[in-house]
Image (tube, rainbow, N blue to C red; front, side, top):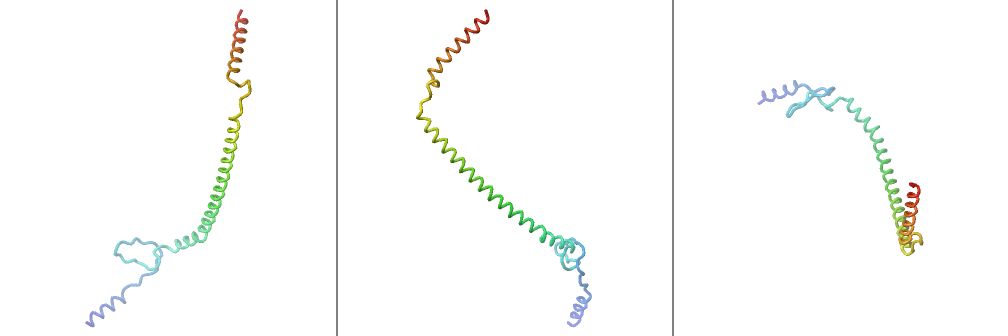
Amino acid sequence: MSAAIAVIVLATSVAQVPSPCVQTHPLYVREVAPCSGVLWPPSWSAEGLVCRDVRLPKVEADRDKAVATLKQVRRDAAAYRERCVARIGRQEEIAAAAAGIAPPWFERPSIMLGMGLVAGAAGATLIIKASR
């Protein structure tokens, strides 16, 4: 029993302690990592912090600006919709008022027909006289 304990103690003391990771290593299932710590280079961690500290606030500012622009566009669309509804209402009122008014005498169909016949006859007469 003491021999087994001695072998275990020696095996654990001889086992190499992994050094900190300085480069990437592919790891497969049930494979022990050859190093300890973060499993990517420290420069990648620094890039992540820069992204968080520099780019994230800019993205948040852009998002806030986009939200404000969207709200303004919605307000403009609502105002435009109200103007259109008001214009349609005025046009309907004008059309309803105009429906009760008789057209002037020169716009009546019978007068227009007579004027067309007279103009056509006069034109034909002028053409015939000009061709002789």
